[in-house]
Length: 323
Image 1 (cartoon, rainbow, N blue to C red):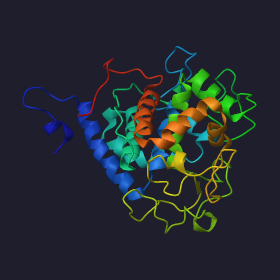
Image 2: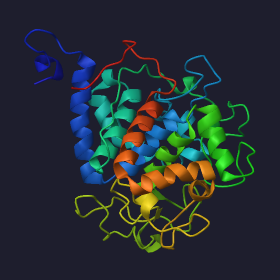
Image 3: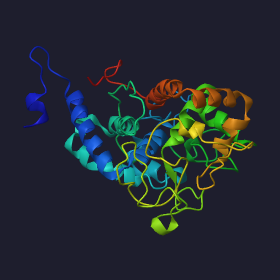
């Protein structure tokens, strides 16, 4: 039975995009549950949204969550290394529901990935217009004050925005360019409670692809899922937390030294993580989220929603909601 043949209520027809999104959501859930690919789905969406520049008014030049990461013109940014894998996971789903569009599909997958890992349900809005081709994507060198990657955050110094510290870099990227507050920066950083870094992608850790190059917590027999189930996807890389397929506040609660680095040396950490514990303004939010997971979930969900809507044009203007 086709999507169109039964997605109508007795009194009022359901928007065909909402119907497609509902079906796509179920397929994404099953795909994530099988492939254990929560983190890379979040990264694909974040790096699409992260091209947004609030100083630019024109669409799609201003960037944001408009689906540019579907095309090699954006996926070829150095900061997007490896993300074609996430895009390819979604291709068969978009082929089945093309009226959904890749912009909504990318953001839907990110929200599903967070919830599947045990994180908060995010009040998402859909109906995004999407860029139609690669020549509509933002250019790597198009962001004033940033040397490349359309101003996406750097894994470490030297920072492309010219910042002398990691805290300044975060504020340049997420604050000046994208419009987030310090509190929202810390909440979004807590998203690192899931995910890994690979030597072959960012170069920001010594752990690479495969079991032989894996860290203690990313070997093929490790248990990282919130349900205790087996499977981590591809082995390898280094993780910020031990249970890196479980969304909770472990990123904040695991013990740190005075420089903001984990005492567990089998974890990976970036300067942009450590600075949250040493910058006095960031640190006050870190302390809140360390003590109160509910507060972290609440603030994370709001910040994720905001991130997912950056730069977007919606049809209808108020957007679409999934029931």
